[in-house]
Image (cartoon, rainbow, N blue to C red; front, side):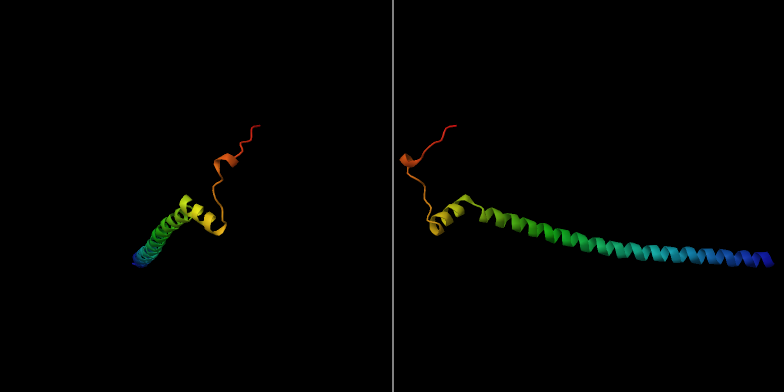
Amino acid sequence: MKWSAAWLCLLFAAVLGSALGVVYSKYQNRKLFIELQALQTRRDEMSVEWGRLQLEQSTWAAHGRIETIAAQRLRMQLPAFDSIVTVQP
């Protein structure tokens, strides 16, 4: 009788430890899944922002815009055809 009670206590402790391990594992899984979803949301937001920044950069770097600013602010203009000198090596 003494050994069967000891085995019963040992099995109970093993089952209890296993159950606690499963609960902890599920908790960690949920916690990491929530973190993953938050990171994926952040990634999507950053991807949208990157697209906006690329569009803004292409707008700022457009040739027509640069030519207009050069003409207005710097008073630059295309040279006359007869004043262009080609340098040969």
